[in-house]
Length: 627
Ligand SMILES: [Zn+2]
Image (tube, rainbow, N blue to C red; front, top):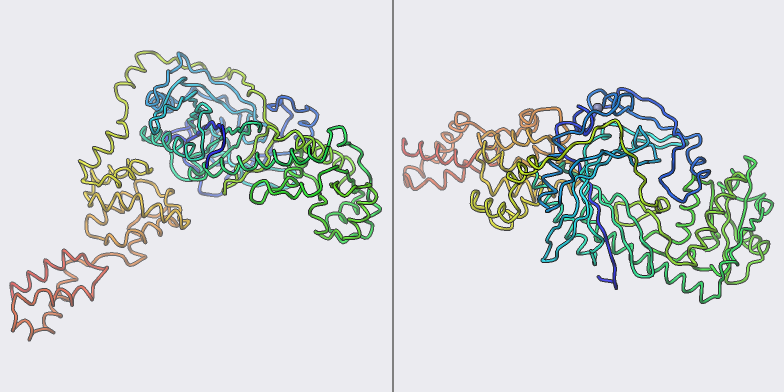
């Protein structure tokens, strides 16, 4: 798919697999256990990162909200709790980030300055995220096109959301402070396929450093998308590479549909001034309503307020992207500052317990013409008014086309309204962390030890391990290259088998929902060595790995035991071979050595999957020679 002059910029964030976090000595792996400690903090209104947004509204958003942080001593310390200042910038993370920068031909800055970027959702205990530009002005050649890399930064990851309930949001702080590399391209990607390709290419470069984390959650991608006549839309948090192209496609359709809605509104002669803020109290029309949310709001002393949206009939139900209508956009907008009880629009009614009669009564009371629509909100008077203000704002935006927004990516590639687009991010110097000088000598040293490029790597893999080109590429693009090389240097299991297992088998297990990436490399290595020393069959590896995923704290040998995967030893096989030979005495007398294949077949049919065929062959040959 291509649409005229679609322009996309890509921002890739990837966790670095360093020994410790960016500003303290805590490890970068995540807690598997229940938190040992919880502490509650109130969200304080801070300066807005939202630029033009009303400070009072922001205050409202924060009012009465608390954050429940969950922590444990293994994965966090006083730095994450914001009770101790950050230590100096993690040198290992700087090394990785600079190495990736040099691979993308970017120019390192002279001095790395850590800045504070304000965040409002509580995901950082400090109220800001620390970020530092490391290099500028790089480039990456993808399919013969040079993609400018604007900037490469080092950032601290935020805490991960653990729970959400009325007025309280919970975050686990094990992830807080894990180093992230951020790579930003220029907005020069012109099709969904190209976006996907470039993301893939950047991923290859980052993996070449051998110091990035793998698995779901280790990558987050943001997109900036614009089409002519549309608006710049920022999509945050696409987790899977494969979804990027689809997210772009869906966003293009969404903007195009919004533009067609705008044209229809113009066609119906709607003028901005006609969209008024006259909210009508409709509560008495719903005295006997069966709609649960409306009843609840009225019982609590709230009201049902309604507003006429002239010329909007049929357009609120218009699907912008799968599962998302203009009406949905209005209610997300209305919910932004803290949720609203019930919000309904005329295109979706009667439904949700609102009757045909009630719809007719509202239509009459609001004096709707046939082309008009309405929105009603049931909540406290103040909240209902705020919600309708947001609805009217969104309606006026619809008349103008596509509003600039920041949107959240859903796993299926659709997006939801997140917040208005902030102005240029406001940054403040982080005075607790001294600048890190990037001396020429240091850069030169890194430059002389750059990891091999992808072409060289593929050539080496093919030569050293006799892998075919497809498998060598797959391995390079997988997260398991380092593991593969370690396995081959120690266990000497057939390279093609190991490479296929680490790429194809692991990928299909992940697709089945088995979190293979959570198994530490050391345990994976042990599993391959079990094949090498004849303890298990190659065919048993998948089962063992599945077991390991659900027994992360146990050793692979325990799995071999509990699954009964252990291979038979020579001492166990010999009596079986002897018994089968005895049974086939007549055949042996007739054919002698030529009876080998019959005997072999009979033994294997008894021990298949539990014995190494090579070992069985040896024993049968030996016994035949002695017979
Ligand atoms: Zn720490």
